[in-house]
Amino acid sequence: MIITNNDLVYSKLKDDYNILYIDGSFRDVLVKTRDKVHAGYELLTHPLSSSLKPNETPYKSVIISDKKGKLNFNSVYIIEDAIIEYDKFNMNIIKKISEKIRKDFKLIDLTVLESALNINY
Image (tube, rainbow, N blue to C red):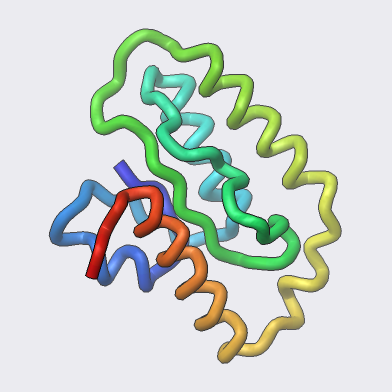
């Protein structure tokens, strides 16, 4: 399952993957991911992957397992720490980026996700 707030990811991959689209912020993606992890889903990608810091991009896509199982404490620690790290950043920069730059960040997020999925186009 992919949890994302990136509409480019959703539109490009929705027919091939189980995608939970979040109409919200990077933090909203982390919180929804945390909720899923607490329900027994396992993180398959790190929620703070890539070299972009949370205050540098408004978009995030995270891959978790499709099926829930036992609570994975490693996933719990990682997602909880990711939210704590996210909250340390000043998010005022995000509010000031142009639509062109937002499109670039959507593409970067998609590219990182495709790399994790090993998609070759």
